[in-house]
Length: 568
Ligand code: ADA
Image (tube, rainbow, N blue to C red; front, side):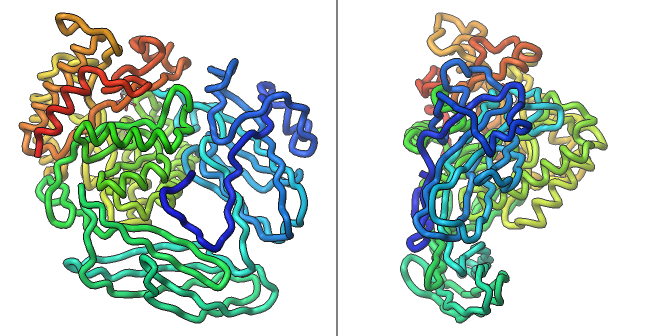
């Protein structure tokens, strides 16, 4: 399931979930041997969506793999094929014809196939999960980068005139909203055609317009309306509005929430009121499902996060499922969305490489396209822990930030720095996130105080003293079940000690606007990276979760619950 609500009442859509033929291609022979025309006999089938690393014998497999699905089309029709997320490089073939290539991992891409004949068709996908120095993330990364088609593949049947895009913008004046609903309609016809376009909200018709579309063209139409006294979305007050656009043969629904995000005097304001963020870092990962995290579990995840007393989640370190964001919208939690640039071990030269930069820009564009209507999203984050002390980083970051601002000015642009005392990027951002591990990687947990003093003073000098500062990562590992009488390294007790001490320090610093504990749940680590860089990862896991990988609470969970719930 993709969303918690219906996006189409008229358009026919089908998820191609279920078993697909599957074959590994470790020697990369498939393209040469034209497997997209003659798919080799495969005894294996794999459920889609899933990650292949959760299957027997494939725990560590990184590389190329092929998928095939037979698709039945009952009558000739225009078809839209949407891949909601495939990890790494993907090439898609339909009946032996190359439809296109996509690089990414956590955002959708699509192909339109006009007038597809009735009958059986063969859909083949070649994927390559290999990480290298120019992939995002690169080969040095602190999570297990699974492979596979991790979110559903969707087949939509399109009418001759179809709604290609629906984008909703608004401006608030008090509680009155100036709303613009931008609709793009595309025609497959050889002749000019008119259609009636109708806009409604929550089932109530708001406007209707006759639109003319030239043969084979796309036309844009914007509905402008003033909605007086809208109910505002806020933390804990999830007021939502569903806008539907329909033609005679097609429709699309998008859901938004009205709220105003600003910063003032180091505070984040939602609808003019400061909010202190009580959050966790969440990887969308589970030992049985990898990144193909099932919606049912998201409901439980949300319950646990609410039980903890959180009002916000950082989506570390990549765009997470729309279904998850729907749940956050519906429960009034704030979300931080970011692309998977994980920089702690990123060489400086990499950020200047044109291919790497292009991939990052595309990922930003796709992330914003995916999440732009969710009221829960109030941060767009452009990278995590790159070497923010260098001119290379400055140039690269400037380009990313400019792109975000050209696409969306209604949210805050941010990042997470691991060099708070030497970082030269601070003035580029609306909000600054700090990742630091006193009590774990460096010194005593009390070291946060001194670091923050120096940081605030430096931010002031650099002209960024008014920016809200969030503690976006801090914590330590606690092996689930390892408890004792004193807080030994790696025990649940020591982890709970670090986290509680750190939270007390941050809460006492009036210049900190929120805390995101690293991390919500234990996650599987990447062995290639782990063996080189992360020798402290017992079990091959990053054990800094407040709950273990099966979401069983550790002592730190109970301590944080007590603290977060006591903070108003
Ligand atoms: C970094 C990084 C996280 C994780 C963490 C850790 O700050 O952003 O992804 O690797 O450190 O556990 O060391």
